[in-house]
Amino acid sequence: MLYNLKGDVPDGEHIVPIGQAEIKREGNDVTLVCHSKTLTVAQKAADQLAEQNISAEVLDLRSLRPLDEAAILGSVRKTNRAVVVEEGWPHVGIGAQVVDLIQRDAFDDLDAPVQRCYAGRCPHAYNKHLERAAKASPEKLSRRHGRFCT
Image (tube, rainbow, N blue to C red; front, top):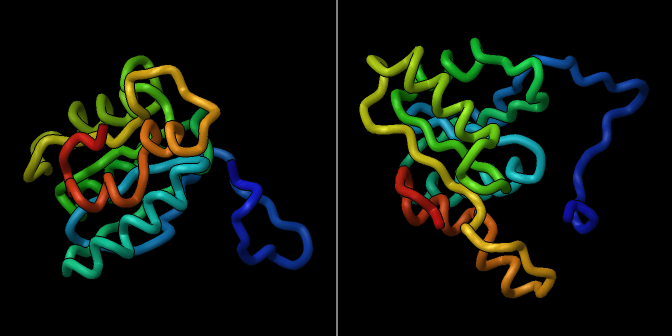
């Protein structure tokens, strides 16, 4: 799924620290929490939201265990809103864990309920068009800004 993506590759040895999330884009209005393939989805959605004068912070988890809880909570406390973007289904996944963390430890900082953008509740197809319909996308994420995206 990432074969067609192009980007910069750092020179020399590049080590990503395990357990440390990274803010890929600063923002003030909403935090988009993502990991793996959903990073590009969140970045494109942040671009689309910027056109609507909505400043989205993109937080790339980079590793899931250990999970950088401090980075998640710090970003959500800054923006007071969160949308968790993931490729998986809504049950028993990393998105559910992140939402649990935010609701449990940053509930009083939220101006709106935590929302999620996840894959459709259907088997993932190999057909390109059906796959696009089922997966999280920048359009679904930015169009609904803080609503369920399926």
